[in-house]
Length: 230
Image (cartoon, rainbow, N blue to C red; front, top):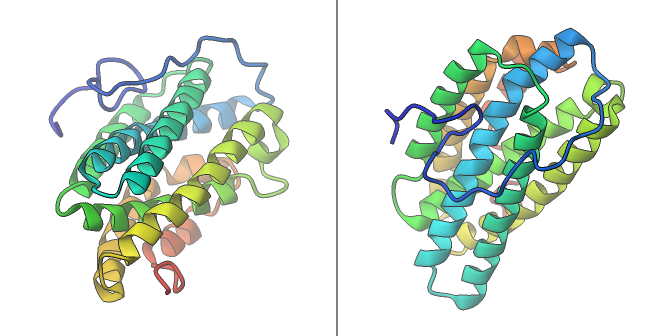
C-alpha cells in the first residue's frame, strides 16, 4: 500500500470506503492568499489521518471480541469518515499545492506502519496520535490565529477536535486495559516522534497560520505524562 499513488487529490487510501465530500458548497473562507495556500498544504495531511483512522477503527472493531467495545469502535470509524468528508469539502475550495502531494505520501506511509502489530498496540499508537492531533488543532485554533477567526474553519476544526478528544479516551481506555503502561509509553514515543517529523516538513504552513513549528514538533515528540496514567 505504501507504494500506491493516490487516485485523486486528497485521497490517501483509494480503496477506503469514504463518505462523499464537497456535496454542498462551503461559505467563503475569510483568509488571505498566503493563509489559504498554507491551509491547502495541511488539509491533505489531516485528511490522510482521518482516512487511515476510519480504516483502522473499522478493522479493530472486526477483531474485537467484546461486543460493546466493537460497537464503540465502529461508531468512531463512522465519525472519522465524517471528518474525512468535511475535510474533502474544504479541500474542494482550496488550491492544489504540489508540496501537499509529497507530504501526503509521507503521511500515508506513516499510517500504514502505525497499524503493524497486535490490536492492543495499534490502539495505543492511535491514542497517542489522536492526542497529538488534538494538540495540533488546539494550536491552529488559538484565539487570534487566522483559523480561529474564520467561521468556516473554526467550526469545522472545532468539531473534529472535540470528537478526537473523545476518541483518545476510548482508545486509551481499551489499550491500558490490555498492555502495561511502560509498553504503551514506548509505542507512543515512536509514533509521536514519527508524526512530529512529518508535520515539521509542513513547518512553513504552520508558521503562516500562527503556529510555532519548532515548539509544535517538540511538544508532539514527547509523550504527555498523563496519557496512559491509571
